Image (cartoon, rainbow, N blue to C red; front, side, top):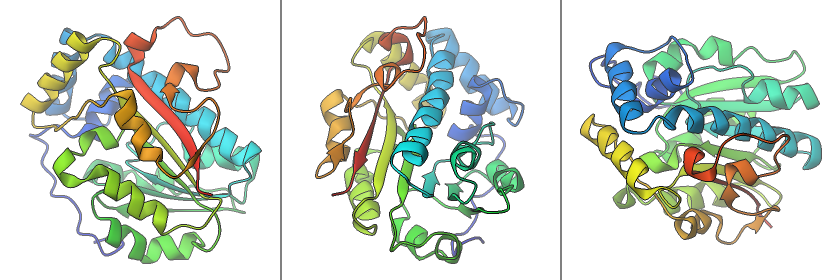
Length: 268
């Protein structure tokens, strides 16, 4: 048990989103079930690997923005996934070594690799919670969270490629609202979310494969993704395909290939 949350049962026979994502990124911390799910998905839509790689690039750009331009020094990254350098703390601490990060995920393999996520600069601090995004009250009450972050000061909530695993009946909008309600003015929300807006057939078939493998996945439109930022001040350029969010270089891909919306919002 970590942070008052019971660890997820370890079942290597079922694919897990964090490990399938690891496969798509070319990682080695996965099992046959994860590789089979990824292979079947890629057969349907080979662009899934491109989407995963570009999602990591979006993470790097937005965290650098938060640390270098917005002055954020505290980060809560839920749905962390397996360590893939540079991680959030490495990006933020490259700007300011005193930055503090709390990571959270519900995959036992991520938990097993938590030490890699806890290798903070001496001036900063990191911690790890074994948790589900749906367990907002447990996240906000976790001792590790309060030992690492000061919730009286602005915090950036990072939800990269996780909300599309939350079904409508689990109230993803309410989850985000409750997280942001617990944080002070000047806090930020960053998220990325898969969409079928640009290539419905390919991505709906890909999601069908994931659902068939037991991974609930919900495609959402631009309007549905933008709704997560209700009552927040959107940072330019707003909620856009992630390739268009402050690109640092030209990428040889289309929005249909990457198929993720992303945005950054500030709590007034």
